[in-house]
Length: 312
Image (cartoon, rainbow, N blue to C red; front, side, top):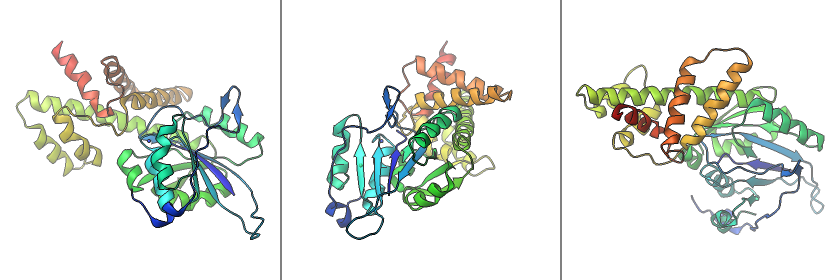
């Protein structure tokens, strides 16, 4: 059996991985109109959506089924996810538009499941095309960023073919700490957008709080500590807060992708006539941050958009 994984956006060596053969696949076999079906846009992501398809293949020599993994896209998220598969002993072939990004994984033993955040309509379209080709499809957007991807602590939000979900579950467990099966294709994408809509709004409100605390003479470091021990505690605040106070935004989830996910979430809400005024306001703030050249900074850099407003 072979299945392909497309990464969201890109440590250990093991004797098993080093012993494996390695290769780079420069071309993609299927076409989506004029684009390869697994073309992976340049985007690391806090968010990913995992879509996989599988085809049966028999092992002529042993009569047993052989399981191979093709991994497409080696950005901030994809590279560590593929590394975790390799070090677990999986037969992995990797692909990336820029071949040089494949080299570290080839050195680990890579030879080749789709993880990107899209709207539910796009996910359903991809599913239909893949099924028309006679393959199975599973969408699985992930919740998590660079560090969780490295540590195998991602959360997979899957939907689609249940039998394929059960087949790839052991591989999801290598890359993540939990997985959810949410039913029909589109539900995984919708769940991811809801999660990222909330996250983006939380970061915008947190940024306002940090700046207000400074304005009234409080130490923002104390704010982070107080929040971390209270009812509104969230790992994101403790993780991002200290760096934000120092105006440092190492990229784990690019701001441009957070704004993209907010835009998609607002579109999802519009499709069901749901009012989302808080997310809409947050989206405008991220757009301002993008206009200040912060697209490739971590999404916590949205605080700089607020600073710019205060200066004016």
